[in-house]
Length: 250
Image (cartoon, rainbow, N blue to C red; front, side, top):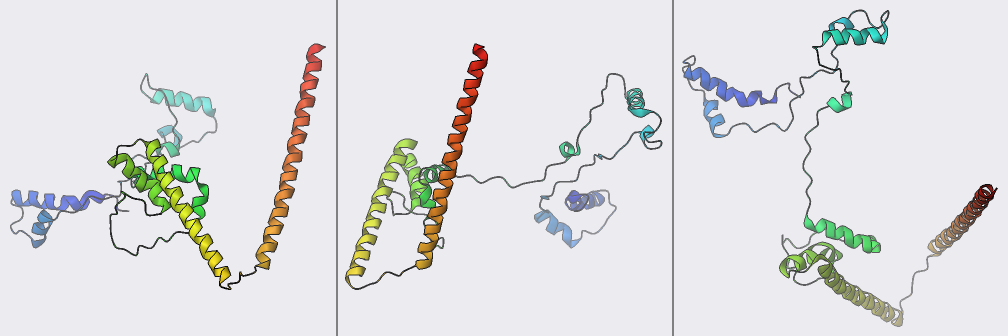
């Protein structure tokens, strides 16, 4: 990183001052280009000129042997002007902050988080992120079936265009979403029944069934262990309460 990123922006000004003082006779070709298109501001913050590794005059030579901490504090008090106190800063507090891009936040983000908080299983549904239609805007006056429209754009449209409150827009959007999901489930069920009627056979997955059985067995073991631990803790709490009651009565 250069020590002074603003040097390039001062070249044109310095040369113009030379021309005004008649220390230069010819105008170079690059000066007109810099006047029409000046250099952009640097996004890198200039380094701080404050050094955290400095030391007072009496600290550079002898070290700490001989005087102790009290001697150093006395020297610091005599070195500083009257009325000043010494304050120790950590290097982390004196470190300059780097430039970071601002967070881009849309009003639909909070609505989307609320929907997925109430419907966590919707996040497990596969989604196609590739855009097949090259359009930048969409009509949100009706619901097309995507959960993202319910959680974000559709609810936001109802709040802005129809003047609904947040709760009313959420209730209407989720009602439309439930109707679409019910229709999709019914279509999938009918398609499965038609396929079985026409002779389709389901694919057996013995390894998946075995894995599910093992997982269910381990879940039952974990539930039993947690239940036993909770009962043991309740018994300990009851015993402790009885002991305190006996001690207070005595």
